[in-house]
Image (cartoon, rainbow, N blue to C red; front, top):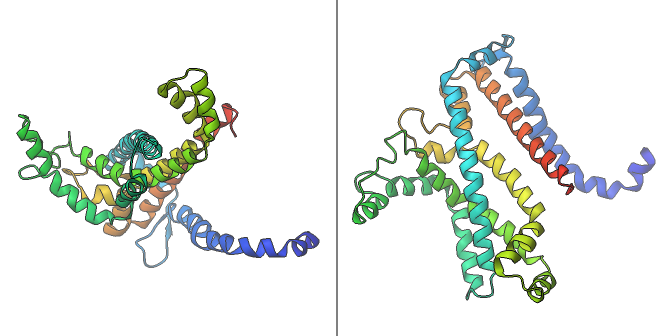
Length: 289
């Protein structure tokens, strides 16, 4: 063991900072969160053990279940929109038919560097019921004004659109990098065989992007389940837009029930672990891992 460490001392020293940061800022806080979830703690003083009472409370907490349902909706909608738009935009940006691709690639990435809160305020103005641009366009087309942020029926739509608008550019760049690494020989051979554009996309592009899309799906899943800014800046009536991560924050820093907030955090970790494991298992069954 010591001989191996001495032999590969330089590589181990290079990766050591990552493990130190992981241990200090991720592993220890996670273990502490699990411990606090079994206590009653207001953030000051000594935590008082309470067994599984926080988890029992969670099972009958309607706000917890509503925020969980909201997050599931955000996750599914975000996964479909972000993944779909990323592949579509990346394909267009990689097409030789598009002129000025360097400019459009830069412009497509700009939403990702904008502050989430600032964009949330802009989207709030866009979806405002009385003078918002979206409703003005609908009225000009002969439709009625929609109470986007004051109705539980429509309040999640602006949040989903804001999320897709912010995250799509980043994943577009990832997909585009995958497209640039696909050999043109495949497309030339398909052309010789008489394949059209749709067939090339379905049988060459998508399979070649398999691992890239798998990585994106895992990352989108994590991003959607830890959503906070978008649902916070675009609140609907009551808790209709509250995400699970936002409810965890409110429980810990608004109500100062750190034990209950930690229990929600533990459930969030378990959900993400299960979802990631399912995605890895599905990928492994396809023989690609």
